[in-house]
Length: 384
Image (cartoon, rainbow, N blue to C red):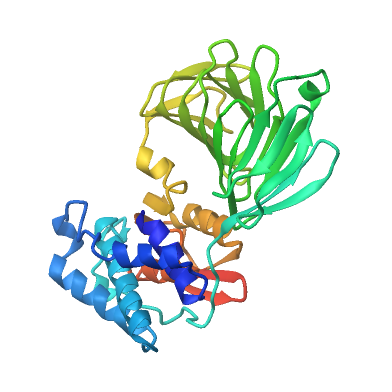
């Protein structure tokens, strides 16, 4: 069980929805924590002092125990978050140098009563006949038949397409689309076995059954692909005026309408990027950037961990502007962001779980002492 799985299970426990098997998993997991799985850097301040400060604040946030089991797991959750803070670098840095944790104006402007929970598994599936099916982790079993393909939701929460032995001309013209709202994400398995993770505020259009000389899909937003290998049928992703062509590989594509660049990050295999004027090839560990200000592709070394952090349950930022950070926050928490004062020159770096309440993320940013937030309903006000 991953640390993210633990948080999900712990939330289920507090709500009283854990099965006996899940309770057993929680019991077994408590011995599996590791104090740190990354090297501590000197500029992060004294390690023991950081632990003391974080632990004090975590304990202060914990409700009084109502029974022994609840007390144990609340302490376990606090320990888990503390480990995340140390191991994942939950010490945010401002561009002019590292800020001491104790210097932040911790939570003075943040409304602690505001509870905006993170996104989850939510999407809508639009079938070829226009029928719309709401998807979430509770939906299971056969949903529809699309030509020679059956559309089902697995018990693990994945939408999957299975192709029958007989195909016909109708099957080749049947297109479906899946869309996630702000605050949603989803995973699906296409009829060729390709796995797709769809980030929030994204959509994918695809045939229920692939046929012809290639496998074409259309993406808006962000998705991570693990493409099933088929040398006879290249896999092509069309997105914002460009195409990504692969035979079988793992890559991430970020192409939101409110982002100035289309970024393709390659983890495994090889891809070809094309638009109406240029083409370029990516090797593992590289990213291709297509900006709306230039017609050719810019090829750079990629930060793989940062590119796929969303898929792995994290926000990861490295010298990133507050505007860029808050666009991601807005998509995942489904909030409106408003700016007050001069925040143009502020950049931050760090990593934090996407499974936390929004206030935890904002309080972490406030620890730098350079930015402050106020929550009004579903509006987040960013202040200098």
